[in-house]
Amino acid sequence: MMRRIALGALIVTLAAGLMAGCGKKEEPKPQAVTPSTEAPAPMGGAHMGVPPKQEQQVVVPDAVKGKWRGVKLVVEDKEKKAAKEYEVKLNTDFQVPGSGLVVKVGDFLPNFVMNGPILTSLDNEAGNPALRVTIVEGGKELFSGWLFSKYPQIHPFENPKFGITLKEGVPNKG
Image 1 (cartoon, rainbow, N blue to C red):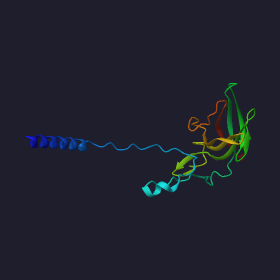
Image 2: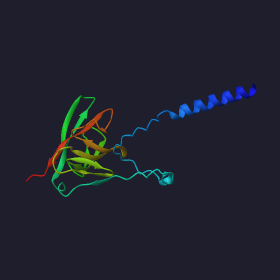
Image 3: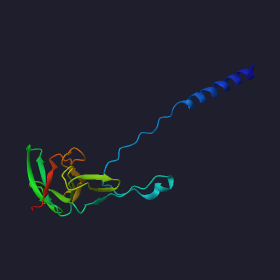
């Protein structure tokens, strides 16, 4: 009698295990990849099959180099509920009037695309204008990344008093 009970318990346990194993396993969902300005991850995970994080590289194509002299930035004073447009040369520092903010204006890509770790421009047409900036206040970096003219809500500069967005690129004359 004891053997029958033990054998029955064993059969029930095996059946439950088999039924649980026969269920369809859910595939892991892919995660979105977004541009980042963080430093590359240390190599520690490489031995466990985790590829090291690739450092992003900005490539300004020859068709774009020298074709743009600057950009138009819109600075919004959130307290005064007012906005003003400024034309700023590329690769210069711009002191935001009435604030301690300095915008370090970098590369401009008129048609921003991302191909793995390479950030570049598809061509010289203003299809997806993007500007690389670093914003500092009192020597402290507040933001480092890209401002997108057609998609200002993607990776915006967030500050309780000021908003800074890219309006458009300013082409060289001639």
